[in-house]
Each structure stands twice: as structure tokens, then as C-alpha cells.
Image (cartoon, rainbow, N blue to C red; front, side, top):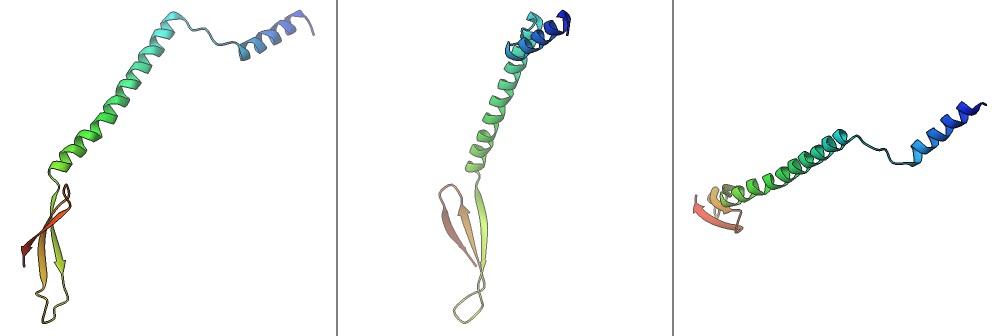
Length: 93
């Protein structure tokens, strides 16, 4: 092997162990991409909490409970369920 081969081998080994230097334009582009990725992550994290808060204020449901009709039961009962408090209020038959 000649001198050129050992120089290429040394260059290849140095490339494996030394950090890559970036051109200043590449560094700016990389930092702007990191900034945009961080901003998107913050927006995604903030978005579900607003939806959950809005859902909590409107979480009321009608619940129907059917019973086996015997002499003591009257059929289907209606209730209003408030998911925020966990309260079940009877609305009647």
C-alpha cells in the first residue's frame, strides 16, 4: 500500500471519531428546524388540554335503564348523568 492509501485510511478513521463541522448556513437551518419542531410540540401539547376543558363543562348525558317488567318495576327509567360531578339525577319514567 502506498502513501495515498494510508492517508485515506487515516481520514476515514478521523471522520468516524471527530464531530462533523457544519457550514454556518447549515447551522442556521438546523437551529430553525429545531425551533419549529419545538413550537409544533408545544402547540400539540396545549391543544388537547383546551378540548378536554371544554368537554368537561358540557359533559351531561341522558341515561336510560331498562328493567325486567314485573309487578314492582315500571319499565324504562330516565336519568341525567353529570360527568363532572358523577351525579345521576332521576328524570322519571
